[in-house]
Length: 354
Image (cartoon, rainbow, N blue to C red; front, side, top):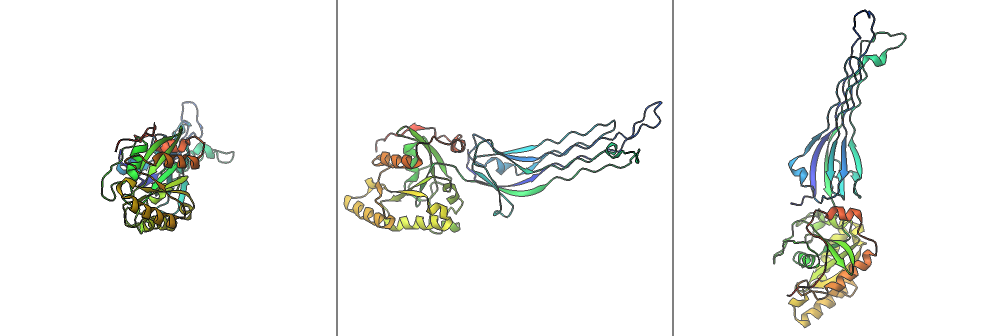
C-alpha cells in the first residue's frame, strides 16, 4: 500500500428539502385545510478515525465528497426523508486543516473518534406548519436551507512510541528491518526511504511502535530535501533515537545538523528525550571509531551508544534504552491503529549473521 500523508479534499453537506404547499381534497370534505409536509434535513459530512488505516491514499483517487440532499415534503402530511451522511474514514493521527493549511480544525488522537465537519441544511416547513386560528389556509412554505461547502487539507502525523532520526544513509532503515518485521527499502545511496515506515518492536517482553523517518538535511525545516512534512511525523513520538553514521566525515557536525533542524521546526521536538547512537561501527577502524565517538560526545554532551545494525552489536542495549523511556504502559490503541495495516507484525529481536 502506497503511503500518502497529505491530501486536499472538497466536501459539501446536503441541502435541506423544501416544504410543500398542499391541501386536503376529498369527496364530501369541502374545506380540508393545508396538509403540506416538511422537507427532510440534508446529510452531514463526518470524519471518523478508523482502525486499520495508516495512509491517506484513498483521497488521492477521490477528492470530492457530497452528502445527500433532504427529500422535499409532500401532500397528505408526508415529511421528506433526511439525506444520508457521508463518512470520511482517516487514520488515527490525522489533522484537518482549513484551505489555508494553517488553521487547525480538528486533530484525531484515538480510534473511533468522530467529528462533524459540515452540517446539513435544515428542511423547510410545509404549509401545514403555518396553520393557525387566524390563518386557516396558508399558501406558502419554506425552502430548505443550503448545506455547507469547503476545501480542506488532511494531514497525517504518524503515532509511534519512538522515532528514528538522522541524516540520509545513517542506517535507520537497516536498524528498523533488524528489530522488527518491517521491510523498508535499503540501499547505499541517500534518500532510499521516501516514506515513513512503522515497525512493532519487542524488547524484553515490552512492545512498542518504532517509526523510521526519511533522512533530514540542512534546511529540512524549510522544506529542503524531502521537506518539513516528515518532521511532523516525529512530533507525537515519546522518545527519539538519533543515529549518526560512524563513516561520515565528522560525527559531531552530523549530530548538530539534525538537532538544528529539529529545533528550528518546533520547540517540542527539541525538548523530546533523545538517545544518541553511533551506527555502523563495524565499518570503521578502532582509532577512527574512538575519534568519532569523542566528537559525538562533545557535540551531544552525553556518551553515545555504539551499535551496528548489520552485526547486531549494541542493538539490544538501544532497544532497552528506548523501552525504559517509553515505560511499562502497553502500546496505546492509537499507536496500534496507525500500524495495523503495516506488515511490521511484532517479533522478538534477534541478531542476524553479518
